[in-house]
Image 1 (tube, protein in one colour):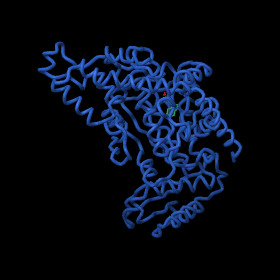
Image 2: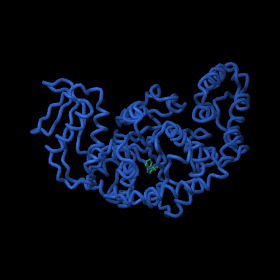
Image 3: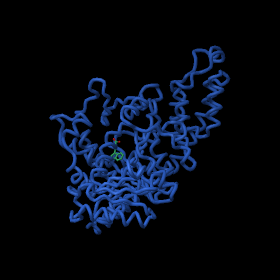
Image 4: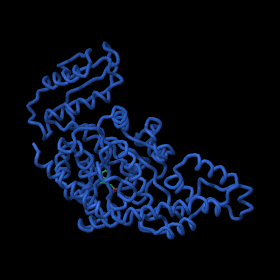
Length: 472
Ligand code: TRP
């Protein structure tokens, strides 16, 4: 099983219930970029503006697709266990926003992972997903269009990729990423590769082809993301980077890599042929100053320094047309975990720490009424010192869910910390009415969500079966 950390080196363990919340340190240690891109996103929701989404890898590809109105995709997944609560809602809120922006959405139910890592039988995992999660997704406002939902165990293209891409992963890599040892069962070792298959299969031609993809997740998933991005790159034919060349200056360098190991190609493409193919693609795009160095297997584009992403994406698509995978390295965003209502960790198995989406409005209000606040021991003291809103779990639900309006949130903070607004009034004015309205709406929309879920699942199955028909 995975170990937590060795010496001073941090390790992220996706299967541990204890997660570090030192996000700045996690970010620095693992080379995650700070998320400061909300300004470039159309009508970025509160989660993006407030630092709840605190980091990313490679999100620039997605931003570019949004700006250029090119196709892009969202893929994320859930491991079925326990009731769906406000912590899980976070991801769906992001997915909803992306769907409105025009992305196609694919959601996976990680029934294989759940089986391999927690011993939950496949049928039970699926049942949990149906009973606890999927109808809530739709009830929260996810649209049925441009949405696919599938079970890992049912989509063979995903499992197929796990095997094929596994060719370039060694046990040493799995040990160093996950802390696996000789005692780890092989099913568990395979689970991350199935997740790699989840994330990359949406770029197979039969599922929409190469396009920027974002995977919105908690930072505990970062090891899987690193593995996925490495493998996406390892199976590329072209390596596209920005370079400073002595003679040419700042250029986009395209290197042809080996083709070996790529199941999708007949491997007859010689490196020179690929160089010339890249040159043709780039000329067509309007890049005229191209230097080819056959001996190095390299090609340099002058005047393309601002276009690395475009060039990378176009060459990925060219690769795909020629029979390669052409994966564009998938992006990920990382969100903070919500704290529990009682101040500790939010936990699925402890109802008092979370609001479940199946709590009725009264129960949800009751939980918020009893939550840990940043209030002082007496009203008098609070008027004098002000409340500690930064430590308040009710305020936490405002930030994440209940108060999307920045000016209202600021007002609550100002009045709260200055001692003008006391906890009772704060809850009465904001928390209680807002949580009741939300819960009522979710419950109402959920009434006919089950039938919609069945339809989405059926349609997703058909799409994958059709895809099987066009398999090369
Ligand atoms: N491992 C994820 C979890 O523990 C679930 C998951 C499976 C997933 N496949 C995925 C998440 C693909 C994002 C993308 O919750």
